[in-house]
Image (cartoon, rainbow, N blue to C red):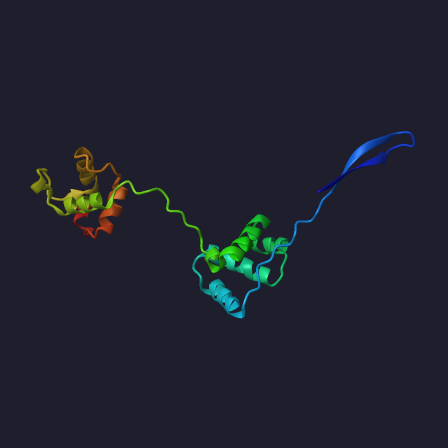
Length: 175
């Protein structure tokens, strides 16, 4: 940014000092040269990818490879110019890996694998064999037993998910 001092003349007798600021245009950002094989790969991604984020990023890179300016790509894709620049920079640095979404792992599981297996084993047992006065587990009864036994403090839905993942038959535990 170039700064200077100028004078504004409002009337023949008054002269006020004013700061003059020259605004530079942001430099254009483009992807590196794309080979014909890479171009075909981009076309395949845009037509067959089931991940909208990956498709959007591939279109941004293809448009940049065709020397479309960043503002035009941003308007076309209805995204910010900063997003377009970031996708272009990422592709220049990492190649096709930059097109994949960065899914975060999320919150760690509250229940480890051994506990999950123990829960499934308990769910397969007859409640009477464990000293309970009923013959089948419901999710609520199983959850209450797990909490009072200090095995796991989980919700019914988490319990349902664990049982499905462990292959416990849906009929063996009623909701």
